[in-house]
Length: 314
Image (cartoon, rainbow, N blue to C red; front, side, top):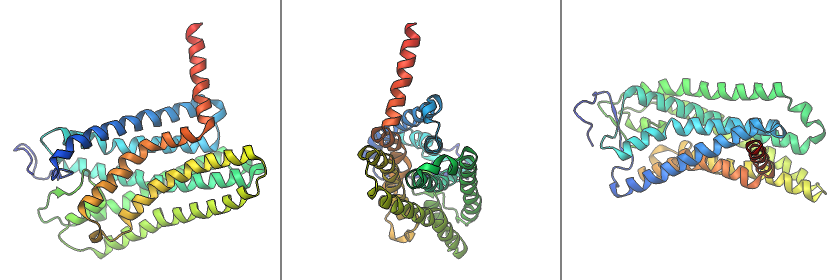
């Protein structure tokens, strides 16, 4: 796979699914559909959470941040991917690759931390209902989100230079559909113990520790749910917590398998399709999961459309 004559020698070639040209058109259509669903669904959640005063709670504040994250995350990857799938060129400039790698890593790490914060919010809501508004006051929620965003930024600032400084020895082919860390590390012609240790350490901090905190939170929540005698409240707890737990399972399940497993134990095709799942499919499913299982969001959407309908008539 070669770039056109006008391409710079510093450009990277994103191989993507070029070894399966018969699948590229199908994949491009599916990616476009999922990307459209991601934009529409997550934008709807952000607008509804902002416009409906009944959703001005910590849970929907965090959910809005998650939706914004998913929009930014997919936008840092999919437009370039579609250009490469639809056109003859499979290249990306060095600067574009660096930016794509940085933002994907930054936003992915931020989402890992944010999902843990959302689990703590559910713990406070279920296990400390009488003190919930005192515990999760707006200032604390804003500080938690700020820390989450700064944490993701910090991980990107550490890993990006370590990965990009690895000598490529003339290699320009990235065996993936975007500039992701495992693919860039495989391009290196030397082994770096420092990079391996940094990747593993940050993987523990941003994947295993948040996931452990999420599991602990839901362990305590499960004990509290068992003691709930009100059927209505019991179902509400299961709906809100179930939505979050479904998102956690989809996101963490694939990303931990990709980043915590030794890279030489993951086949090329397996890695690409797993990456396709957690970068494209999961962000499009998040709004669907939260709206289908959450009566508050569905009621808010109905109220907003009802108000707009009557305003238009008057």
